[in-house]
Image (cartoon, rainbow, N blue to C red):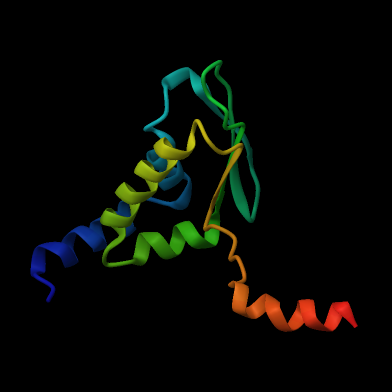
Length: 118
């Protein structure tokens, strides 16, 4: 159930931020000198990541997904989740992409594998 405060916060977030500002908010959890905007293209925003103890080298945030996140009622919670996920991924993955690419479940791959074996 939604209360008035959540609706006000969601509206305020959507009107005060654009996708570039949201991207900066998401990556702000990383060390200050570790990131820089690599390119702000029409479809996505890319950040280069550098650091001795950091394995990650690239962050890619799709603008359409960020706009959707800005309009989402639960956007603030999802932004916090993205920030935590980014911090967890910094030492493990080379690239952080939002939204994550979909991976086909094993059940969907079984028919394709059977056909390719013929």
